[in-house]
Length: 63
Image (tube, rainbow, N blue to C red; front, side, top):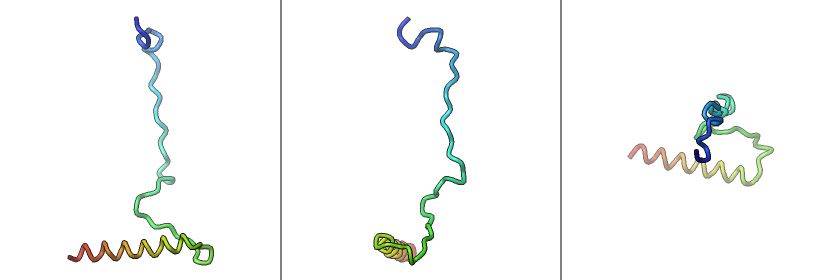
């Protein structure tokens, strides 16, 4: 017998992958709220890019 074909390995249960709880899954495209007073420059830039992208998508849908 070659490596991996021994009788010792035949009856081992296959390990299951752990599943992420539903409450911890972040859906794509969901907005995250933040307080305006704690937002830094990067947060504000991301907000403006998001608004611009939403506007482009809305214009594209109407045409």
